[in-house]
Image (cartoon, rainbow, N blue to C red):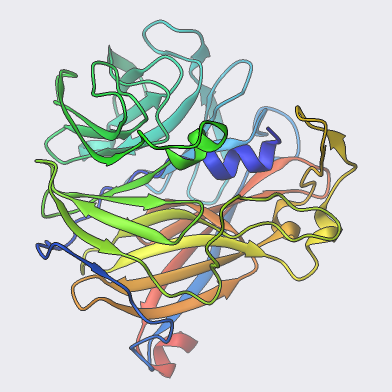
Length: 379
């Protein structure tokens, strides 16, 4: 799978912000017209992470990024051959690398889940080994345990418990997509959508979910392909709310298609978050009007068809950010942006993958705010 497509499908979203409680068990279909005429989503560039070359460059595409209380950024690179984590200061200057390649304590194969908790403790989740590693605020290894592997997203709750999105959890119930573990690493239970009727060819996409925790103790699960849909599950396995927006930028489809010079890429949702006011934020990808200019030379795929690599990710895709009031069941505001943002660093900070002019991987970091008047927009 090409690097940009794989980034789109495997990016882990880790949310650690409070939110509201929803209890109604029904499907809500917010209309496409925003309910808040004076609301605007303001996206402002903060820093660019990743040098052109040297130790501050990414050896492979970034899979996760978090920000600690000192404003430092920690970035995971899943396919990096050596050190897996990069540390940058608040201005985007590279500080150092850490994390060796391997399957033992303090080592990583494919770290694609990062969470910062109290006092800047760092939690690293590895989807290939299933290992959860803990580092102290000085980024020294403390301990590790084995949880779930081959997941597509993980949400860590304030009590230390975790929920993984995976077709089958380690010790979990096969065919169910959400799997919960205690703070000590012990398996608790499985719940959520069923993968039993999945299409084998597209199973890895149909089983994908992006997760975000709710302050009420539940977890949001966002579907990235085929349809625009996200659901709230309580941790006892009860479906509390399903939201299916009527979006002008997301047309439902049966088969996610990559771009060609004559066919734009299919739209996709990317990440979900819930802010301290209980609003749900969703980022997504939509084809850039000049998507063909970002394509590289075609290569032959496994089935014999031609695949066009995305040499310029931000040229092929534009980004979309939607904000919902899930209690009222309405879309509050939406904005289309040039940067395709795939990660919520925090509920107020997003990150998007791009390639530099020299072809190096970089992460664009930006703040995202919902404001209610023109004066606030100008600030």
